[in-house]
Each structure stands twice: as C-alpha cells, then as structure tokens.
Length: 570
Ligand code: ARG
Image (cartoon, rainbow, N blue to C red; front, side, top):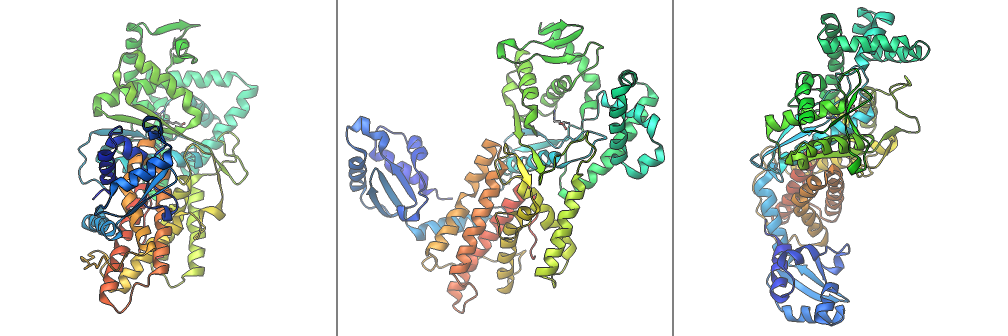
C-alpha cells in the first residue's frame, strides 16, 4: 500500500539534514483531532541544534515545503507542522490495497519467516478447566494467528500438566473414595471431588501424603498399575478439555505435556551437572541464581523426583531441537513469573544463546463478579458451564431482538462464545478482569457482539445490493465522491490494520487487535450513519459499497486473529 507517512518522512528528511528518515518516521504523530491534520511533526527536538524556538522552526519548515502532490494542505500550529493528506489519493491507495487482497487482507500468504512455538492452554489433568485457563487458551490461540498473519509458521503446544506428585494423591484418593463407574459418569468433577477429599483428610493423616509420594515414585519407575490409572485419568480429562476446545474452536499441533519429558530429564540434569551448575542442598539439586537476585531453581527433590522447572528445561531443549524456533512463547498467569525467569536463566547459564528467544507472556487474574475461583475450595466454576451459559443468554437475546433469524443455534454459539473470548482480550492482558455478564454480552458496548454485529450489518448491506458475499465483484469507484470525513475516517482505520497486527505481535498483546476491531466498527457505523448506501445513483452506490466490502473483510479478519467467528447475520 502506498505509505503516506513514509513519503512524508522522506520529504521531511530532505529538508532536515540532522534527522534521518527513520527518526522522522518515528516522530510523526497522528493527531487525535482531525482538524489538526492526518500527521503532525513536532519541532521541539530541533530547537537546540537550530537555536530557535520550536514554533519558529515549525513556521519556517512549513514555508519551506511548498506544494506537494500528495499533501492537500500543511500549516504550522505552535510547535507542530500539521499535514493534511490529499483525501482522494488516500482513499484510492487504501481501497485498492484492501480490495485487491479481499478475504486475505492483512494475512500473509506465505509462512516463510521461520518457526514460532507457542505454549498455551496447558491445563492440569484431573483438574477443571476454569476461567483462568481460558485466558491462556484464547490469548495463545490469538498470538498463534497473529504470528501466522505475519508469515511465521506456528506450532501450538498444549503442555499438559500430566505429571507430578498430585497423581500419586489421585491414585490414593481413587482407591479410597471412588469407583470406575463414578469417574466414568462424572469425569473431572469426580476427580476433583476426591482430590479435595484427599487434601482434607491428609491434614489429619499425614501418612496419606507418604502413600501418595510412594505412588508417584512407582509411576516414575514405570509401575504398570499406577501408570494405567494415570493414563485413564488423563483420558477422562482430555475428553472434557476437548469439548471446551471444540466450543472455542481452538486446536493444537502437539499435546506433548510434562509426562512426555520423563525420559528426557536425566540428560538435562546430567548436562547441568557437567556444566557445573548444580549444587546439592539437603539432598535436593538446585541451580543457584544469587547473582541474578533470584531464589535458586529447583531441579530435583531430595527423593530424586523431578520438578516443574526440570520438565520445562527438558521441553525447551526438545523444542529447539525439533522446531529450531525463532521464538518460544509461554502464555501463563503472572503468578508464574518467577518460575519462568528462573529457568530461562538456567538455559542461559547452560550457554544456549537461544535463551533470548524464550518469551514469557503473563496475564492477570479473572474473578467472577465477586466470587473467587480456586481448585481446592471445591466451589469452582467450570469453563464449560460459562460457555454454555453465554450461548444460552445469547439465544434469549436473539429470541428477543431477531426471532426470525435462521440458524439461531449456530449464531448464538458464535456470538456467545465470541463475546467471552473478546472480553478476555479487550484490555491489556496483564490486567485482572472481573467477569461480568452485563458487559460481556452488551451489543452496544465495546464488545465482541458489537463488532460481530457491525460485520453482519455490512454483510446485510452487500446482500441487499444483490451481491454474492462469496464473490464480491470489483467495484467501479469514483474517488471524488467518497471524500467526506466519515469515509476518510473509516479508510484511515482500514489502512492501520497491518501496523496494528505488527504491534500486537511485538507487544504480545491481542488486545491491540480487539481495540482496533472496536475502532473500526465505530468508524464504520459513523460512515454508515452519514452516507446512505443503497441510493439511485450507481456511481455513488458502488463507490460506497466498496467501502462496505473493504470493512467487511477487515473486521472479519480482525475477529479471526482473535479466534472469533463472524456470522453473516445476527
Ligand atoms: N500446567 C500449568 C498450569 O496450569 C501451565 C503450564 C504452562 N507451560 C509451561 N511450559 N510451563 O499452571
């Protein structure tokens, strides 16, 4: 796409010898008020060198620029030079680009930039998939799509928490309190019930903890009976997780969880020993990180059993060998910051320069309108129930607003679940969220349903114009017709898409896409409000329909990058 900002930077760098084109590009601002132009160049930085007051510099610079074809007007206002891009050229450049890419606008056609591993969702076996895990799942899935849009090949890994002493506890609990039938019938909620029961009883009878540890040792030594139970718990759990993944439309390229690294940990520990990083402390093996002001990273316990970090170290090495990643991204709650900081350091101390390519993307907590979510307490809210409730509530909203809608079920599914996903990523992910039905499902707020509704509105206009949505024609556009403020507003938003995708990737922030989607929807609704589309005059109609089509593609793709479907009607 013709990049006016770049052209402007080039123009200014010819006039200003002391600043490079890149520096100028970085300095150019987009004024929030369009009366101040499309771009503004601040002159403060030049004051020292030119020994003049910034407003004088701005005035002189503006005078010096003269007439330029792509600039309709430029003027100095205080310390700034404001530039107004020629609207017709702007609209033409953007619409050409969007409409020529059509359905693929913003999405790279090739994945030739290298591999990126994304470790996301990664729930723990036998524990419920709660709203906390939802965040890792949807953020990871979105980062996956964002990086693919930029031309990377992504490998999505579900690093299941399927190993550890808790499985010893579960085996003991199963034998004491449950049965095959009950687990088959009730699944994870039964596993959770007996796990909680175990904890309550073990408080009084600590020998139960020893029994559990013994079982886990048996598992690590390959005991058949113990492993078979473990495998079964895992199957039961995965079945339930799969239902949630299906609802969310999330997939993975690998389900290699913690247990997968069982036979890869000894080598990792040996390497740590050989490189002189291990210190034995009270029988446990640790890597000291005092020089980094961090607590030591625990590698093995005094009974020799492995730990979470051990498995992450082995997994990172395996992933580097298998995928030769450009980056390996881990999406987890911020409570795990220390864990990741510690073992990333251990990889660095092992001498691997790719330790710099390990990225932890932490996110804040979700609470449910007041109540707290915890596995131990027993009163957890299962994610599946929330998703189902979202769909049900959406169904009643549709019943009320648009009872004639065909495939109500399917639309309710897309909108209800999309609403939950969108809400999860609307704010910077490090922020805590308080889940609120009222906010999530508000069709007029800054929400998923609002964005989806705008997309459906664009689709409906195109359909009313008699167009086939799967095969939208090339419009004959009269660029002189479409230069009103609202049109230029939406066009400018459309032009931003690629840059937004890039900053979302650079900052690991799907929220940039979510905010962009809302801005785009608002700009479109203003355009729609100001410009009647299905008018007599063919010239006007087609030119405006082109904007509608370009918006439809872009909203749909923005939602796609968030992992949200865009129904044609709602
Ligand atoms: N299973 C962990 C949890 O639920 C998350 C795992 C994240 N990935 C990793 N490689 N450590 O807290």
